[in-house]
Image (cartoon, rainbow, N blue to C red; front, side, top):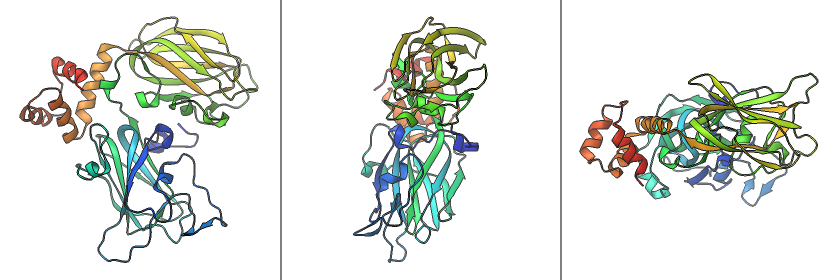
Length: 378
């Protein structure tokens, strides 16, 4: 959630380096490195910055193609968090006479950690047909494909430069990896911000990012309040779950940390509210590890800070209810690309012919014993 973002751009960027995404292959990166595509923040520009190969750009730039009929250049991005893609932005900022006139986007879903050679052999589907794009501009394209993908491929025709490539969507974690205690609020677990009172200085979604914050701007900071109220943020958890402990981190907030905080659990199924953490004093620049006051099942948490101030990270450690994990597994199997879903079903012991027959009826309810075998499979 970013101030001013609307439509699909308000969703998390699944291809952002902050979520551990990576550019695993590029057909050419002669002028500027492929890794720049997924850097957080807008592209920068310096009129004086030249290298041995020419003007240095904060983006991905390929050499000029001279051979007719050779297609275009492409880069493959491993999403930091696999998910359902709702839209992409092909940003050509600062590329004015050297941007590609056309681009397309494809996606695939695969098991494990494939090599670039293995990815080139995967089944790819088109998310964005070959389309005209403008130079020095954000080029947004909505996506309607409902499947969960792990990798996306950006192709430019015939060559040129792209500053940033954003892949906005809904994170869908692998439920087989959601056993035991997990951070239920993390973006990589499927958590997300659904409400926030103020995001004047920075996005509240920062508090759900992996790892430690690196500086004050890497968290959520609101404006100074001049009334009797307080600021708050509400997070949808990965599913209905039991919260065991929480972490409220004020690292790098020295003179602008909240004085106190509380955490309320909300169960959307029953509309019940429970106090997970009573109003508690906070210290500046400190990680606070605190036990939950109850393990009653909840689907959301609301963090209240008093009266205002910055939070670097919020961790909500707990366990999904068995019903929630089973429902997540059923959805997972129903939205995977066919080849990926078939691989999981056969790994769980289902004959290939039965797997294909079952997938042909999707979306469908899956037998409880099959869901259990999937959750216990490698």
